[in-house]
Length: 185
Image (cartoon, rainbow, N blue to C red; front, side, top):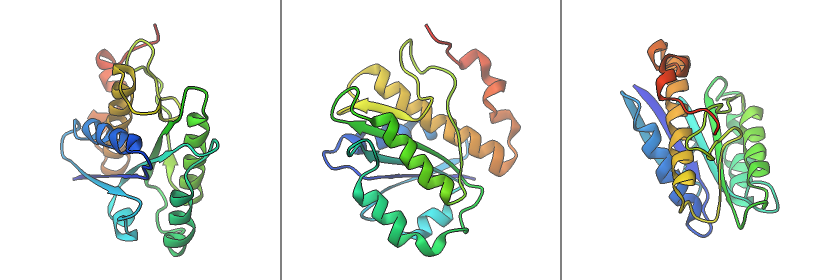
């Protein structure tokens, strides 16, 4: 069984909405169990349980939120070197376009890499204009089809990579599903 954790912080509810969409995407991959936890309720056991992690945070000054940083600095500190080889990705909502959401995703991915996660980008497009090369991003809530589809694609790709890397399910490799993938434009 593929085990995905969607862990998020959400100050205004926008990242929580993104987390729901990421969860929907991950659930599209067969034999995948998904847990959703806010940073306020998550435990180290949730991180030990999962094969793959989608980490979400509001964008605060171009980086992850203080609550998410504190969780990794304090709650997870003693678990450093115990999460090696898990698959990870990121998502973030900013106050507006150009508000630093991709930078926030980079800061989330940096945390994951420091804990030994293998992180990935998504090369294909969710819609004509929607992509998540660095993670799923949106300005405020994910209202548009582009934003919603991008979140779902990120979750689906996390579940696919986890199925391949953690469970040897080669049929889930994205290159085996080229007819489903969208190119730019």
